[in-house]
Amino acid sequence: MASGFKPEHVKIAPSILSADFAALGQEVRDISAAGADYIHIDVMDGHFVPNITIGPSVIKALNPHSQQPFDVHLMIAPVDPYIEAFIDAGADIISVHPEASPHVHRTLQAIKGAGVKAGLVLNPGTPASFVDPVIDMVDLILVMSVNPGFGGQSFIESQLRKIEDLRARITQSGRAIELEVDGGVNFDNAAKIVAAGADVLVAGTASFKGGQEQYAENIRRLRGA
Image 1 (cartoon, rainbow, N blue to C red):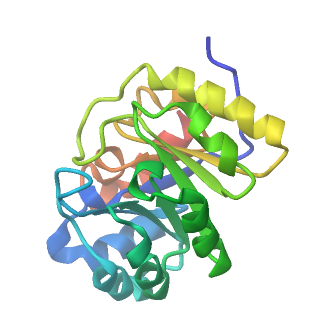
Image 2: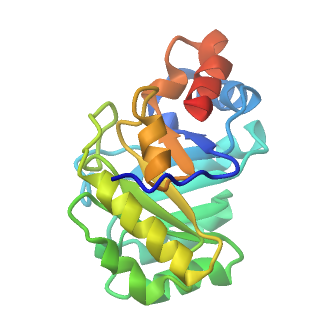
Image 3: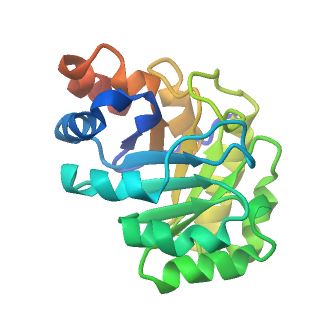
């Protein structure tokens, strides 16, 4: 049963994985102007997940194209040696997987020590309890509602229960932690994802569908769903 959570404002974080990479700077400008709250950037290494995307140099190049926070999701292992490079590139939020670091507390400590917001990512098979030892350090919890690695997958319904569980843990902590959901988010399921407890929606296909003239309407529909 959904928790009935009602955030004051649902944030939309379009994933540039679904953008036109041949015109990435323009795409970031357009989606920002259309009302995106965050620019979600998926970094994959072909090792931790079965795909390869972009690195710090691309993020640095995109920085002048948007004033919106860069929400960087690191799907790389080991993650620790690259934290500084992504901070220097302009990441505003860096989210990591507990499986990608032998000492995730130290990883989060390094991110926050640099003045950047820290997030913890839970794969579909990673239980909500993984946040408990570090909930006092995180600014964001990201629930993967698909198996990470590729865009365009379908939402895994069992993750709704995890979202509810995490919302309860956040409430109990008394901290202002954002609960973000990534994977298969669309106009049809956004309402139940938010009702379960999410207040940030990552959407790639749904945000970039139809080209630049549709971006504002796409974001409006996601936020209002």
